[in-house]
Image 1 (tube, rainbow, N blue to C red):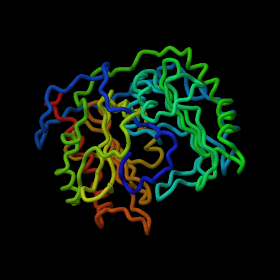
Image 2: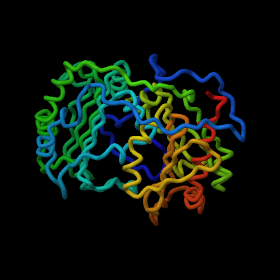
Image 3: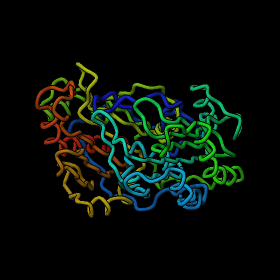
Image 4: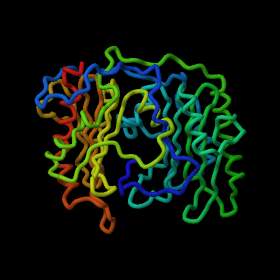
Length: 401
């Protein structure tokens, strides 16, 4: 995860969601670029709108097919409001969509309460996050090996079903399932289960299994469909933060001399998230502060991922986003969502078949030591479109294609 102070510390819950081993596997969806040098300062760009087609879940099922929503709600109980599915447009960015590009089924349900990173989650928030990827089984086992918490219930290469009952500072239950089920790689977390003071972990596991045993039975006999591939694969494989998100140029437009743009991660690089990055060539480049562990935001890039921009653009616009022009970038489409000062400023853009996103965080609340230079958040948010333009120009350089 990004080593920003906006990310809260969590108790060890037997494994973090969506982390994966940094291994480049065969079968990548694009070829290695023929040139890896730094593009010219004033490039000629490749025009072309975002592509509309894109990947679908390769297990041939949707979230409602896999999980009984009524049984899930009964297991979690109700805190404030019932569970409802969250739309992919509200959840996915270029880096987190990498596994979806590989054909994962991604499902998220919440009770609608927002994630609050300063300093702890909303205590009444309920969250269920499920990702089913029909490949990468050796890396699924590597994840289980890393945390060394196997459970024989669903097979040797599985961690879970594992649950935690109420404990100091946490008044709800938690459950998880990670590993190989049939020919799929499952990552599942359930947070915010309503519990009594005497609810045990064994009680939670029993309830968990009433919901997810049918899913496991289905996945044990599932055959994966063919992986989607773009008509014209990106040549930005793998993404190089030094080339596509150059620190010197971005620091200049933000007027933050302490800025360092590049990878920033504080946990083991295992799990579906890392598998997705390495297999698609995607990356997340942090807008980090070189003199501390703080960051101002991040830049995500998904090669051949313009399908994501096309798929989610209407939803972003309906929810208040605005189409913007990226200076000196031909053929790019961009949407800004930066009007709410207490939320992330987000610029999504598609260029040359790829999807990029610039995110700049809001100000920290009073009393939170963010470790950021004074005024740096405001200046970075004001420069968000210019940052996106810099990245898009480097992504679209014709010499890469």
